[in-house]
Structure formats: C-alpha cells, structure tokens
Length: 275
Image (spheres, rainbow, N blue to C red):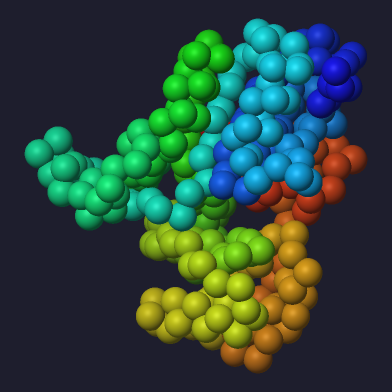
C-alpha cells in the first residue's frame, strides 16, 4: 500500500484539516490543508497511465489508503463539468426548475445539484454522475458538494469590490477555457468554452470582451492556467487589450513555500474564499 500524502501529516491534526476531492472526466485530484498551519497545503493528482476510468482510479486509491477514513474538519466534493447553468434567485422557483433541467439536461444522466453562490443572488445548476454522488455520500460524514465555478466567483467577486476596474478572469485548460467577468462587486458573466487551438481561444476571449463592450485601454484581463500556450496567448491578446496580466494567487499562510501555479485555480480559491 502506498500512502498518497506524508503519513506524519495524515495523523497529525485531521480534525482541523479540510479535504477537497476534485472530480473530473479525465482524472480526480485532492487538496488538503489546515487553515491554522502555515505551509500546510498539499495537492495530489490521481492518475493511472493505463487506466481511462478516472473514478475507478480514485476508488482504488480510496480503498488502499486509511487516510480517507480520518475525521476531517470538512470534506468538499468539487465537480468539474462543462454542463452548468447560472440561475438568478428571482426566477429560481420550484415550478420552473423542471424547465431548466429539461433545457440543460434533456437526458438527465446523473444527480442534479443546485448550489447557491454567496452574495450574488445566483444559483448554479449542474449534474454529478450518480455513482460518484452515492459513493461520496456513503464514504464521508456529511460531505459538501460544490461546482467548480463557485469558489472562483466567490473569491474574485470579493476582490472586485475593492477595484473600480472591470476584470475578466480567463482560466486556461488543455481542452478549453473558463471566462468569468466582474465589475465593482458584481458578477457579470461566467462560461466555459471548449476549444483546443490558440486561435479559437483568442476568438472566444475577444468576442466576449466585445459583447460586453469593455474598454481596451483600462479594463483588465487576467490569465491563469498551467498550460504550455499561456505565454503565447498573452502575447497575442496584448495586441488588442492593453491591461493583460498573469493571474497570481496571493501567498496566504497555508500556501507558504508553495508554487500555486501548479494547483488548479478553483482548488486554490476554494481554500481562500471561506465558503
């Protein structure tokens, strides 16, 4: 049996540590940290070169590691899915939810979850595969389920309250990109665009910028993501938008001595936005 985190940390203070399990189609990953302990943040991506079923890989690791049976302070289950919908509270009524579900999930393949995003008046509606949902409920005491967009929106919404400049956050993926836009404490837009080519990424970013009618000289574009084309994309966008900058996560106590560029942005912000 191979432990996934250092054994001495596993048994040190689990009742004060927060575990996040990030589910996705291609792989699962984990983060663990104690908010009271500097430099305690740990990140682990679970993958098996010969295995294409990410959930099967996770279950194998789960049953091989007593680490998962520790009494954690909190367990987050974060789901990465491109199929989601933001619904304002004003129209998020029980009698209209069936219409939203039919529009977004015509085949209803999975458990539908509805998560309220703090201070926005918006809910995010998404689906988690039933097998994963049931497994997490059986395996952990009171796990909390969350869509990957929620910590991103919560964190940058708070940051935007102290700025009079509109900000577009671009989070790069190997097969697409996330775009989240904020203006003076207001969440404006959030979406995921599947794409692989650099030209398509430039198009989706500039198209969104144009649709919002943002200022090319004053409004700000921040780019995150651990991908090989990040620098080239930044260089191309700089021809059209003056304020293009790399996005860096502040060095909070539990990130002490850690390169946050290697951690998925949504996992890093989950540990900072106090949900």
